[in-house]
Length: 326
Ligand SMILES: Nc1nc2c(c(=O)[nH]1)N[C@H]1C(S)=C(S)[C@@H](COP(=O)(O)O)O[C@H]1N2
Ligand SMILES: [Mo]
Image (tube, rainbow, N blue to C red; front, side, top):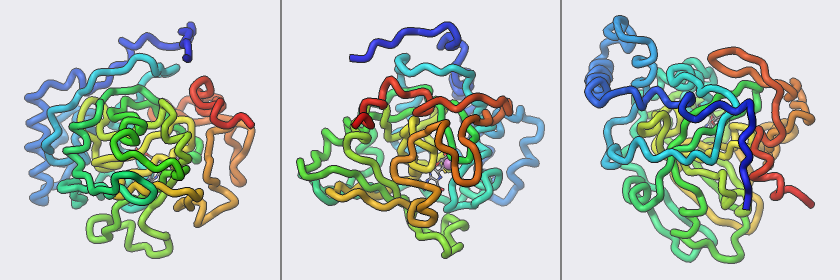
């Protein structure tokens, strides 16, 4: 049992409230109306110029309302605290690594509009008692949704802090029941270049793939995420469902998952298959191990541009260090 002792420098939870909580339903619906204008070919930015920048940023990439829209916002679990303010939603929503759309972070948000996130199925396969195909909305309704404030540290040395909504992977594991021979979980992103222009670059081994050991996947921090900032997950953040493992570099947190496979062998991963000497399987955040091309000792907080020392396991050592003790 982990006892969490509050530290003086941690901010009170009430100061770290997502913007979406203040966003009333009426304005939310107006925002959806606006997105349909942009579908008709009206420039995304021009009709909205009079709107506050945050509101504009927030609606970009929001999927069409789904059968599970009503589940957001979900109750927040206060156990996971931040040592910094939340990143503003507009900032997080316009600076994304999602190579299926573009290798340029500032371009992803405006390239996701043709990406369809319903209907969406997830195939569960491999060493599992109940191989099955799950419909996203049926799955989400069966899972215990909660909101958690987590930091995310990209291997490129920038970081953000966002409110994710999702469910512990352990709840998913209980549902599908891997066999005792299963030791790893392999995950796969969608594969459709018609909806994702970055995938036309065939020098990448599409679709994106990642993996975790089952011990890592069942750690209490490991989440399947379906929401952000109190609403459904936006497309640029990996709608309709992505992984979030906050003690690892961001590339482990695979987006828009369509297949989950249980195996007894450590699976390969997208980045380690491309550049194995730079991106390993474990990818735990570690300030003492530099990337071959830059130091990992500090990180740049997006939005404020503050420079902060990188923390071992991205500040989550108390939850995960035990996984890696010999
Ligand atoms: N399918 C897929 N998942 C992905 C990526 C990607 O390019 N494709 N980029 C990863 C990287 S490098 C990071 S830092 C995070 C970024 O998540 P965010 O855009 O929600 O901040 O997503 C990860 N998941
Ligand atoms: Mo990243």
